[in-house]
Amino acid sequence: MLDPLAFRVRPRTLDDILGQEDLVGPNGFLRRSVEKKSPVSMILFGPPGTGKTTIAEAYARSMGIHFIRLNAVTTDKKEMVEAIGSAKLYGHAIIIMDEVHRLDKTKQDLLLPYVENGTFFLVGATTANPYIAINRAIRSRCRLLEIKPLSDEDVVEGLKRATHDPKGLKDSISVTDEGYRYIAKLSGGDLRFALNMLEVASIQFNGSRPITEEDLATIERVPNYAMDKNEEEHYDSVSALQKSVRGSDVDGALYYLARLCIAEDLDSIKRRLLVTAYEDIGLANPSAVQRCQLAIEAAEQVGFPEAVIPLGFTVCELCLSPKSKAANNAIHAAMDLAASRPFQVQDYLKLTPVNRAEEDKYPYDRPDLWEKIQNLPDFLKEMKFYKPNAMSKSSYEKALNDNYERMVKQGRSNDLASLKKKKTLS
View 1: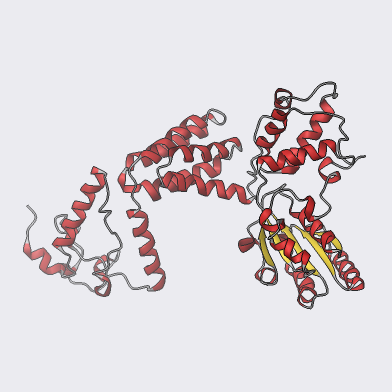
View 2 (view 1 turned 180 degrees about the vertical axis):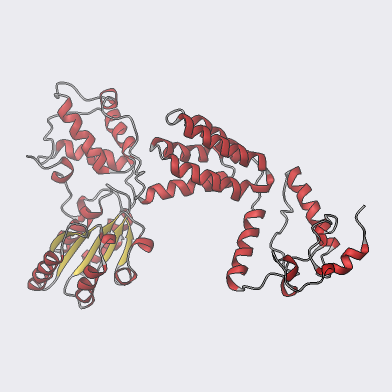
């Protein structure tokens, strides 16, 4: 059985790497490292199909150093001990560790002393954010290098190389320029995806004529979004959706919503839209918050693909609505204080106060006094968690703010007996 095309046409040295000019270009870090014959341990992180492991192997070959490739998921402790022994024989070696963020503590403890004393150099590859997913002990001993998605031009160049390469398709097919660009556009910077699509096309079409964009559309029409819930791109898209709504960018929000809809990730969409509605629109437009809930319920009822209609509706409304974070900021300010300084509830606010005179008990029958009662203890009575949004353009929120300012001006008291004497209930 032949190796996949993506494996057969791998670059051998840094000179063959596509893109990543900031790393492999004339002034790139990896290029300088090779020129000075000064290998370093590093973590290469970035989206799938951008060449992280390929770059690691090309770096080792360019450096002229023996390398061993392992996988943090499938490699057991015995294999790691054997790899370390092999590295010792060569004096200097590079261990390339795929999925490096999946190393458990036992495997990390095994590797770290040898990385520190220079027995080998560790080059890890991962799709995860290294600042979140990789243990600090590993991270602190490695240079973190971001591998970025390839441009469409780089992907097209990679496809052409594979078409002509003696180890690749050996000119057994030809593809129109529009066909190459179509694959590149769908790939989203993932060369592995692009090469796999090219290989499928080479099998499906016999090479009697150039393969066109229309031919390729019969193979794949859906863009290659890395939307698996375990991938960084998924969380980035969810984050970008909320930030676009917050910034009232309806076109940006619709785009990121569309990405999540293509992945049919309704759970993430509904959670993020509800949080966004309450957090960023909030008191400026409560009715829009309610309609967001209704739109989500409608999306759940109809399912995909029709679910995009109510979801698109609520995203447009949330984007174009007035915004207010006043309520969100208020609860977080209260949470911060409550977590740092606990205190007893006032006696007259307790469910069942003990040994308290009748005139000092909470006046359940006097609604005219309720907004005049001090609910916070004396040391917090001047604390203001809620800060009105003075820039609000919402008539509703302005009315709330006016009411708030009226009560602040009026003041509150913990002398219930005196409050009860000032006015009788009419």
